[in-house]
Amino acid sequence: MGGVVPEAAARAHVKNILPVTQKALVDAKIQLEKIDYIAITHGPGLIPSLIVGVEFAKALALATGKPIIPVNHMAGHLYSPLPQIKKQELKLKAVFPQIALIVSGGHTMLVLMTDLFNYKVLGQTVDDAAGEAFDKVAKLLQLPYPGGPEVSKLAEQGQPEFAFPRPMMHTKDYNFSFAGLKTAVLYHLRDHPNSSKADICKAFQDAVIDVLIAKTLRAAEKYQAKSVSLSGGVAANIQLRAQLAEQCRQNKLLFFVPAKSLTTDNAEMIGLAACINLSQKVKLPKLAQIKADPNLQL
Ligand code: KG4
Ligand code: ZN
Image (cartoon, rainbow, N blue to C red; front, top):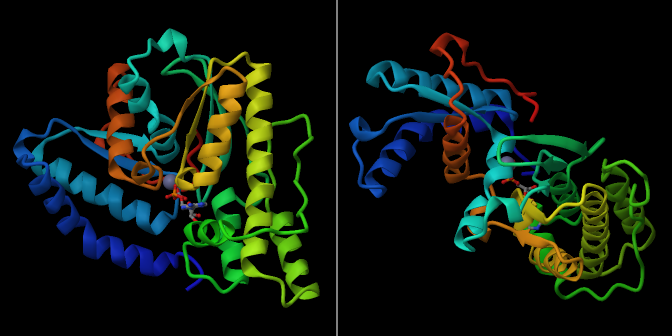
């Protein structure tokens, strides 16, 4: 398997959505009647999976009379480091402006947050996302999917005497590009078929991390940020977490990252984003207005 097959993903969603919802209620020791709202991810993402979730939420809303809060998946990632701010008992004034680096399988973006509710995307990937690059490099090296955890594990043993390019590291914008890096790995493999997988993983990971950190710090300086946050599946990467934390320390920036278990897609971050939406007192949409949107923008 080399990735997510839309048809199979939709079937798996249909099969699992009811038992997972039931299990969540049992684990949380709460009855459906006691729930106030139903939060649902309506985009961005693969349309077959989004439709299953959105239509299931609507059916649940119809059956129970509970209102739906539609949530942008990327807002879920964006807010996922927030509990760390609370844990450290910091005032929001000490945290914002914040530069948020979101690195997932589908997105790589830098976001300027001026406060909890106001944010602006500064830049994003022009081709592959960081996680996607990890997955594609893993595939080139015949490692299982998802590739991020495999590549980062192997990278721990790597001591490469070569380096891959750092795409777009010195461009003035806040965009990223990782497709060329994957191609560099492909050419390296073609020219050095006996090269160690661990060395390739380490050289690749170093290149990705260098670019991500350089651009994040540049944005932090430009927008006089007080803090940096890291989220998305790639935020589980130990080296990225450690190196960004260290760079933030050196640059006197606060640094927030969710617990590793909450970096990859999860319902907690969607619930949290829903609560934040709700606290803005915006009018909730009618059921008929709620639609899956694969290209929903942050
Ligand atoms: O946020 P996420 O769970 O799903 C999307 O919204 O895309 O991110 C999944 C991505 C995958 O590409 C996976 O390979 C990557 O996160 N990932 C990692 C690590 N763990 C997961 N990438 C690098 N290092 C890791 N340790
Ligand atoms: Zn995600």
